[in-house]
Length: 93
Image (cartoon, rainbow, N blue to C red):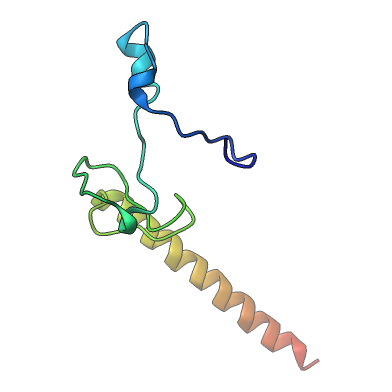
């Protein structure tokens, strides 16, 4: 187990699923730490440089996901810039 992160390293061949539906529940949804990969996985899943949602998407990720992540980043930068401008405008009073 991984220090309370609810993760475990388990080899898929050790699991005997009762149905394909059960097996589908274990399908990957993304790849984390992809720059340190041992082999390329061209599966159309999002590929992150670090933890998913907290790091940058790499070029091999789906285009719509890269666009959404870029828009979120731009929006965050605007909020930070507006907050800094607001603080700068009120600090002189």
